[in-house]
Amino acid sequence: MMTPIHRPSPNSGPRKGDIVDMLVIHYTGMPTAEAALARLCDPAAEVSAHYLIDEDGSVYSLVPEDQRAWHAGASVWRGHADINSRSVGIELVNPGHEFGYRPFPDAQISVLMVLATSVVFRHGIPARNVVGHSDVAPTRKQDPGEYFPWERLKSAGIGLWPFEDDETGPVPPLEDSLRMLAEYGYDVADPKAAIAAFQRHFRPSRVDGAMDGETAGRLARLLAAVGGG
Image (spheres, rainbow, N blue to C red):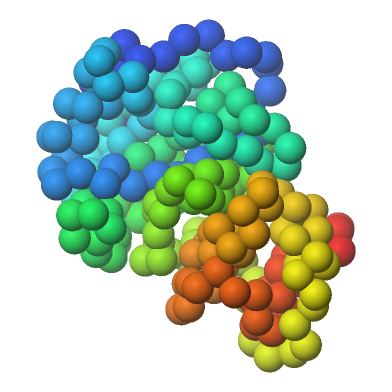
């Protein structure tokens, strides 16, 4: 990975607590990298991240990891609401669903894997806590979206992925499905949004917010991997 380019953002502050146990991955959702950088460094925007990775693999360091970047917004994971205080946020340059969502280039993902491995090791972040913005804010966000290669990250030891062959089985009652999603970490206040967020991450071939046998099977395998379910 190339040496990060320092582009300090004023949009940060002290962490509220000493625990850093999450990595949150985003896409910028803006037409260009420069537009994204300008916004992330604009005091009026009140948003930032610790790092931004351009499509060519260039890395920008915006906020020191010991500071609280403003990237997650209103979000919840595993019952915790102040995600900004306990996470490192990485933005990936991509126009997103609004401006022409497209697959992430190999150069960008290769650099992300190096950076993410370093962040996860440095902070001791559990695999279960390597998430996308949509995982922690299912009613508001779609990023990093269906094209993001979570399986590739898992192959490099980052995060989780249900590798087993998919088998369509019985669909559990909605109450049981929501209990399982909440046990894994999701805010299930909006059931359809929570199911869609899980699918966007772990079953991106169909994101419809409806629990089916394949989605339920993947959720059960993930819970088993983290010792739940």
